[in-house]
Image (cartoon, rainbow, N blue to C red; front, side):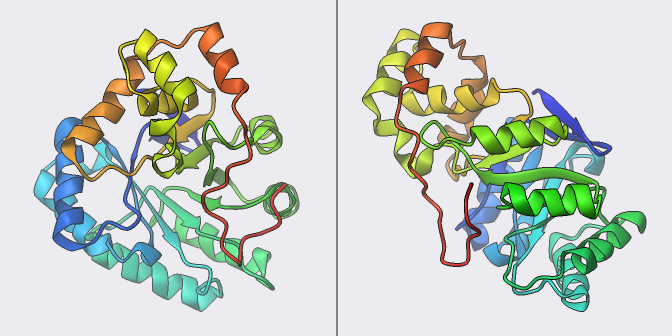
Length: 272
């Protein structure tokens, strides 16, 4: 598995997303993924599944240093004291002394970014999270965090896939040597039904979803965290790393419409 090096951590390019996984089903999915060789697990306080993930990690008996765990603070908890409480609760549920990456899950109106990152940087200095970062930040917000506050951001986690253009955001992140972690990398199932991707897949004895995933993983500075609860899907995503796309494939994918946003809640920032 390829890794991205960022702010002192080594981030596997392919991880397991766990949004909407709950309870025993979530625990079984994470145990399955770890058994297959996944070493990057993504969760959040809002997902309500940190306890299940903590149980799965404990049961796996894999050395802690070999598993990358990301969790996130919800946008209603961005005051310093609330961040501290949320972080403590997440660590307890995950049964960990330290997470690898702690993200602001979504920006919030009227948030105090200097205070937020003062708190996050203190958690990092204390060794309770190895790195800090953001999710769903647009370029304007990133500039404040990176250029004004000068916070050591390890990634920006955003929606990114074959049907959504993120070229401007990627350029900015690349200039700053900050990885993009792509959620919804399979467009919530839409990629699997796309005839262009399916045709490329037939050429390589792969599925349309594997083509979509490999297109992301081939990009420098990009990681992807597809949600997959079934072992067969988890293995298919791992197998996508072996697909070899050529220039003709990439040209066909570039020609797909790039305006499909799957996740756009009312509290989202103004997208670039």
